[in-house]
Amino acid sequence: MNVKDQFDLTGRVVVITGGAGLLGVKHAEAVAEMGGIPVLADVDAARAKAAAAKIAVRYGVPAVGLKVDITKTASVQKFRDQVLRRFGRIDILINNAARNPKVEGNGRKAWSRLENYPLPQWELDLAVGLTGALICSQVLGAEMARAGRGVILNVASDLGVIAPDQRIYRRPGLAEEQQMVKPVSYSVVKHGLVGLTKYLATYWAEKGVRANAISPGGVFNEQDRDFVRRLTSLIPLGRMARPDEYKAAVIFLVSDASSYMTGANLIIDGGRSTW
Image 1 (cartoon, helix red, strand yellow):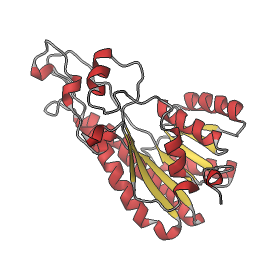
Image 2 (image 1 turned 135 degrees about the horizontal axis):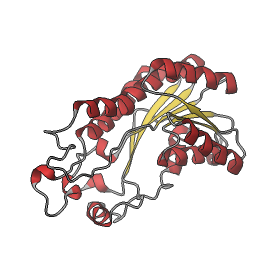
Image 3 (image 1 turned 180 degrees about the horizontal axis):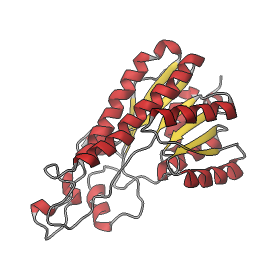
Image 4 (image 1 turned 90 degrees about the vertical axis):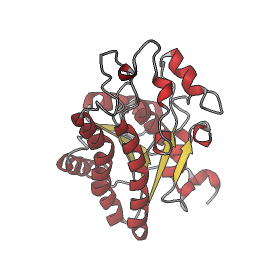
């Protein structure tokens, strides 16, 4: 097989959780461009269907958006059955869904600080970002194992490799207890996804199912100018990522181009984690 053909996804059914989000849509576009069939799975069915419709027209593939609550096994099982009825197969799962609350606030006590962090917030973040990935891997990964082939890609983060530098979130003139920080749940979820990747890679290796992770750095999305300046000062390449800058890496990890790669974490962070 030549190199170009190894990246071909023609006819492969690719489930993308959090499919209506910023990166979820980009993952779906990349899959469609390589001939795959993206299934945008999201709790917001309207946004998922709208995004899928645009992709279907642009790339000429039967992209579809479906509603699913990945924190509930029954919902994921129902979703699986819908996909199988429609396409007859599930080839790839991209565990992309996550909660990423904005680090904002000017109250007397910053809610995101470790001392104040609300337990319900922790539970919700883990339910979506980590438990949801587990449930989808259980239900959809088991279907791949049954078929004897498949790929799972977990979308982690550079903060699944390093700790957040809380200095980049500081605001001048605020007391320490008012300074917002990156929540502890984000780090735990992203580190956990890397661990889940290694577990899945070894668990289903004999069934033909590969599992890898990607750890992207921050994506520029019109964030506060001072925040961007502080963050980019930590990145050797001196900038944040563009929203479409992870597309090729995603295709590499879910296609036959990475056929001898499993249990790995591909870090694409502009070099931030090297400092």
